[in-house]
Length: 84
Image 1 (cartoon, rainbow, N blue to C red):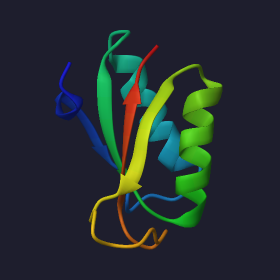
Image 2: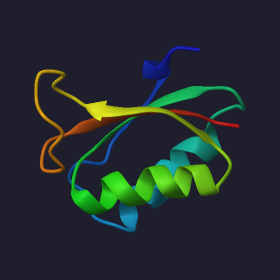
Image 3: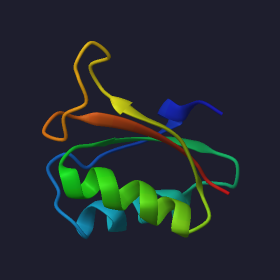
């Protein structure tokens, strides 16, 4: 499945709303579907992937949106998630 089929931008949200929105997206997806989550900030970059894994889903990747930029929590990152 195409990771762009399911997309959410949580760059303007704060914890715990960042995971709540991600969880709601995952609940709407069929098992095996992939989602792209755009996020930023130290807490979301730590908490959202950890919470996604804790709920039994797979974090496929978490990378800076700008591949040329050094990892910086102030800049947007892209997380690819597979619903299990």
